[in-house]
Length: 430
Image 1 (cartoon, rainbow, N blue to C red):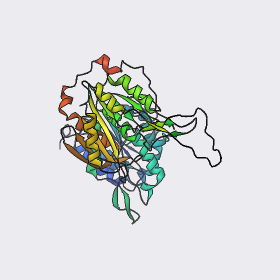
Image 2 (image 1 turned 30 degrees about the vertical axis):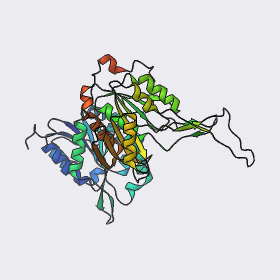
Image 3 (image 1 turned 60 degrees about the horizontal axis):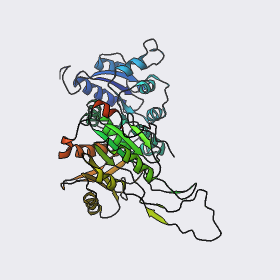
């Protein structure tokens, strides 16, 4: 394929290669990128050069390979390459490289470049033994995903050690597809004003205890991030989580169901789409104590609970132009319970998932769901990363007939919900 044509024609890619025995596969990835028209600059770590010589990459890319942060100091390559790149791809990415990216360490050209880059980042890990499943590696992967880094998971098969396990570099076409997705970010939600709720609520029992649930907010945060990246103006009303606020999203922190209801009510008139992903407590203590309750021998504590407000049902009664999306976290009779909630609350779409199923419960990085719209259309989503689920949810909402008739936001309207004071900060409560 001639240069100047292909799916990556003229797109500027930085390909980072780290010290894995799979480094030789980066040669094929580079060849494919160049054949598809990309302008590729290769950055190698010192350990990567022990597996493949820089000359191989220089011949294919027709550019010098960069590797020494200090030798390149006069050119400031860690800044110039970062500024020029439209996407940074690290393939293969070792466990050590993942750790450095997640922790923000910068002791060589590649890791420094990643910190300076304002473009999308794609990493394709490769490692041996049981390293991929190690809690530290998984924690670093979760951190990277929370920062919108695309992680192309390794595949299962024979490894260099002779073992069979998960750790083989992903197939070239999977990596190319991930790059293509990040380079062709859709803007199909431009002009929409999206109000998202996420996380649990904490209903105080006394000064130190509260009633809550196992929600971590990951699904709601993924929806907010996806909507923002697809062009929407997004406000995220979040219960207590440990997640960083998605870039470009106005984040409003609340604690109780009552606080969440007030925050959403204040901003409801501003939005065109409400996506209610929060796991709001159904009950709260009737008489919370302002001080810590003490044990008194073997005396029982009788706890009286009152139902909290059904926030989505309340807002649905006020809806005029807004599209309403609800979530149904169930453990039995998934579809029937979801359909009943969809009808009772007058929703446009409901996202139902079995939180007792492996890989799709609270706290997991993946989810499987059933999407049901008000016209009875059903979409089954198999287990996939929550960020991918978020995009599928947005696709389903975007396909609703009502969405095409939503009013477009003026630039003044879109900048901030005028009906509420702004509160921009990361959701970092414990």
